[in-house]
Length: 316
View: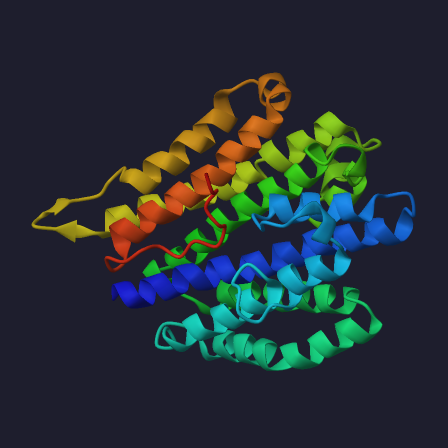
C-alpha cells in the first residue's frame, strides 16, 4: 500500500474518534454547568482547556471560549468541526481503498456541519454533540461492514485505537484532576457509553475505584484503555508481519509496537491498587505513549515528514 494512502487511513481513524470523544467530553462539561449552579465556570473551563492541551489564561476561560475552541473551530484539528473536516479531506485521498458508503458518510457529515453549527449556536450545543456521536458511529459501523480486514482496515483501526487511548485518558483526567470542579463518576461513565456495561459488570452503585478500574482495565469494554491498547498492539503486529523485504520479516516488534506493548503490559501486570494510587501519573504517561506511538508509526510506515501533532508542545 502507498504510504500516502496508509497515512490518510490512519488519520481518518484518529480524526473521527477525536470528534466523537471531544463531543462526549464537551457534553459532560456543558451538562455539569447547567445542572450545578455552584460550579466555578471559569475554573472548570480553564481545567478542561488545559487537559485538552489548549493554552489559556484563567480569566479568559469561559463556556463560549471552550465551545469556540473545541467545537466550532473550522481550522484546528483538535476541534470537533476541524477534526471531521480533516477526516473528510483525508478520505478524498484514500477513496480507492474506502468503500463508497464510508466516503458518502464522511461527505454528508462534512456538508451538514454548517447547519449543525448554526443550530448549536441558536438552540444549544447538545444537538451537535448527538449528531457527531451518531455520525462517528456510522462511519466505524460502515467500516466494520464494508472493509476487508487487510492493511487498509488495520491502519484505520490503529488510528482509532491510539486516539481512543488518548481521549479516554483525558476523560478520566477531567474527573481525577479537576478537584471540586470535577464531574461525577456516573457522568464520566455515561460520557463514554460505559454506564450500563459498568452496572451489568459490578451490579451495584457507582464506586470511584471501580469506575476508574473499569475504564482503564476492562478487557471486554471497547472504550477502555486496556482494550484499545490491545487492539492497537494487534494491528501493529499484523502490519509488521505483512511487511516482508529481502526474504525476511522486518520491523517485527518495531518501535511503535514496543511503545504500545509496554503501556499495555504496565496495565496488565501492575497491581490495580498501585495503578489507582498513581492514577494522575499513569494517565499522563498514557497520553505521552500515544504521542510517541504516533510518531513511531509515522516514521515506520509513512513518508518521511513531521508527524501531525494536535496537542501543542509545552513551552519552557
